[in-house]
Amino acid sequence: MRRTEYPVRAAIALPQGALRDNEHAVLRAGDAEVAAQYTAASRWPDGSVKQLDIDFNASLAPGETKTYALAYGDEARPQATPRGLAVSESAEAIQVGNTRFSKNAAPLIASANYRGELISSDPDARNGIAVTTKTGTRIDVSHAQGLTVEIVKRGPLNVELRYAGRLAVDAAYSTPFVLDVEMPNSKSWVKLSAVVEDPGRRLSSVAIETPLSFGAFPWTWDVATANGTYGAFRTAADSVIFTQTIDAKGGGNWRAEIGPDNDRRLYEASTGGSSAVAFGWSHFQGANAAVAFAIENFGKRPGTYSVSLNGRGQASFSFAASEPAPDHRLTLFEHFVSTPVPIGAATSPASILRPPTVAVGR
Image (cartoon, rainbow, N blue to C red; front, side):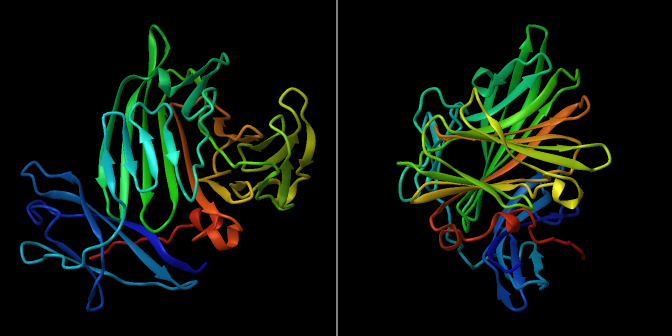
C-alpha cells in the first residue's frame, strides 16, 4: 500500500555511555536531515541512553524500502524543527491537539473535536476500558485504585500518555492494568493499548468503549468481512453486534446480529473457509463525520472478538480469550475523519493494521 507521511517508530539500543541525552541525535535519509522526535525510553545506570525511540514520518510507495542513518554523540545536533501536536495540561485533563483526555480516565476521551464534537456527552455512556469477570461482573476504570497518568512522550510528532492502576475484583484480589494512549501528528487517530494482568485467572474479557455523536439519523456502519457487511441505524434503539470466534487451530466463524438491544436477530453469518475470519476493521458514521476502527492482531489469538455499535452512539470492542489467561490485551485504533471517508481519511484501516516494518542494524 502507498504510505504518505506515515508514523514510524524505531527503537535503537545503544551501548552504555554512547549518548548522554536525546538532544544529541540526528536522523538522515541520504544527505538530508529528517524531522524526528527523540525520546530516551530507558537509561543505563550512569544516566546515558540505553534505548532511544525515534518517531518520524515516512512516505513509501508500494513495496518500497527506505534506508535511514542515525548519527549520535556530542557532535550530533538536530537542525530540523518538526511541527506537530501541541500538548497542554490542567488539573483535570490533558489536551492533545483536537482531543482531550480526562486524567481520571473516566471518561477517557472527553472530547474529539474534528470539525465538530464527536464524543457523546450522555452521562450513561461507557467511555474507557473495562473488564468482565468469569462470573459476569463488569468492572470499569472509574473504579480504579491508585490511578496514575503520565505523559511519556510530549510530541511534537508522537504523543503518548500512560494510565496505570489496579481494578478490584473483590476485597482480596485486584488486577494491575496499563493503558497506553498514542497520537501521531500526521494522522487523526488515537491508538489505545490496554494490558490487564490476571495471575489468578479471574477475568474473562477486556473491553475498550467510546460513546460517539453523529447528529441526525440515519447513521451507517460496516464491518470488513468477505461479504462487506454493512447496515444503517434510523433510531436510537437500533444496534448491531458483530462477533468473531477463533478456535485453537486458527479457524473461525462470525455472525452479525441487528435490532433493538432486547430483540436482535441474525443478519449475516460466515459459512466457512477463508471468509470465516473478518479483517479486524469497521466504520461508524453520520452525514458529516465518521470513525474508522481497527483492532490490532484481530483473529490472531483463540477467543471471541466483539464489535458492538448502537443508535445512542455507543461503540464497544472486546476480546475474551478461549482459555484462562494470565493477562488480557486489546489494542484499538480510532481514526476520526470527515465524510466521504475516501476523501476525509488520510489513510485506510487496512493500512493501519499493516504498518511499515522497521529493521535496525549497524
